[in-house]
Length: 387
Ligand SMILES: *Cc1c(COP(=O)(O)O)cnc(C)c1O
Image 1 (cartoon, protein in one colour):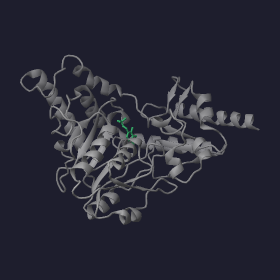
Image 2 (cartoon, protein in one colour):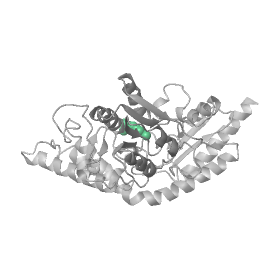
Image 3 (cartoon, protein in one colour):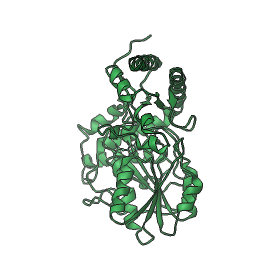
Image 4 (cartoon, protein in one colour):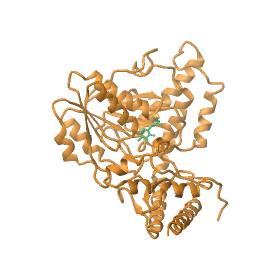
């Protein structure tokens, strides 16, 4: 066994470490290449602008978009806000109805709650035990008032991957705008805005080994052309959709992270699938049960229920050596059962007795084996205390 460096990080749905190659690419833009990408009167600004456009091109290519369709934001949260608020505002003459689903990230759900408070109508589609919406149901709730559909690409707790292409088909058949929160998908699985009929897509660098505080919103330019209203006003950057001086080092790092992902995710996914299958097989031997879809989920995701064992007890007992999550990181300050597990039809006991593991690029097989043993002995000792 090679030496393991503790603590082992296995919470890659919350955030990922910066890839050292990304940091290398970013460094000059903190120091000598510090220019403002909008200051095109001199070489400082020009160099920054060239770097931004190069990153924009890489990101656009990776998702089948054109470079003008990429708007840089501070992250997926802001992208979700622009997509939902901006679209419902811009197309208010078409209607006041939005369709989403109950397992969305808070960045979408809190935004739709706000939309409801200003008079918009929102339909929250339920999901099945695997975290999937029913496509017939989706089609049946579309009305003449429906402006947009927002359904996440891959779930951040259970990893379930939506049938985005079919959802986009339905949206376009009814002349409805389709937004997807792809923060957990881009850089991990193939995403193509053309073949998948996506009109708006939110994603974020720090979920794919890039820096925090930089993300993007893809906005379809043709067939149909979509143009959400802006929600931030100022210098008119990013085609007036998102004003504010561009985060040049962040954008450069984002571009590099995407470039690496395009080359490496295929082989990574094979490795992650093998490891998550192995973990599940071992956890099942001590009563563990999978939360989520057995195959149609992110390869690096594993959400497991240990009946009768509180997830906090497992997490506390291993936390010096292993970092995992009890559910969605954004809600761990509040001791609330996961809204995703409850929506799957599970009770509060199951929601409080489930852990989420997110494998990442720099994990090793030895770390996975160590984690398996550690969690199993933690589960065994906790159940002994209970008896
Ligand atoms: C992390 C995440 C977000 C928020 O992204 P930020 O870039 O941190 O704002 C939104 N949606 C999903 C599905 C996420 O996983």
